[in-house]
Amino acid sequence: MGFWTLGGGGSAPVAERPPITQPAAEASELEPIRIFTISGEYAGSIKPHGQRVTDLLNGQPALLIRLEEQGQAQEWVSIDRDTILVVAPPPFTSGRRIHRQRRPIQVKIGTWLVTGIAHTSPMGSVDPTQLRSRQRFLPMTDVRITPVDGSADGEQFAVAIVNVSNVDELREVSLA
Image (cartoon, rainbow, N blue to C red):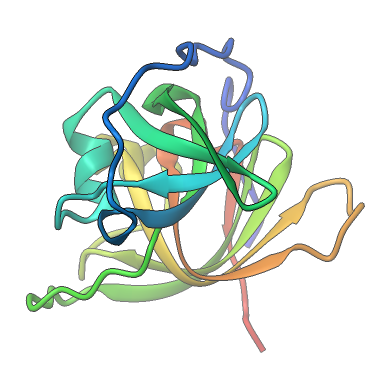
């Protein structure tokens, strides 16, 4: 099956906000996160307040993270969700289980290839047009994120969340 090509994904101007002041949070409240955006990659921490990152992304226009550089905490910044391509969230264990269909896919989004298992509703499709009409963010497991240009081997993540509105191409693959 070939790629579905979509117009406009990943070419929007960056609309990230300047650093903001946030009260000091105890280390036990913070969870690690990686965010791949149109303009770059960010490593830091968030205060999820017991919520899934997918719920945070769907429920607010921006994600508040405390940046980290070489293991040192930096300022808090707010990243507009429209500029987000992929999020590698902190681990989350939920008591609820929703039956989802597991489909191996590869997504080209911005300068990244994201390969893994998409979790869609039982009757859901991985057609990007249909996905966009039902959800904004697509959760994936067993994920590898690799630069499109092949300049690096990429990184493995247990979970990643893809911003469906920024997807350039998507195809089903065989993960052998």
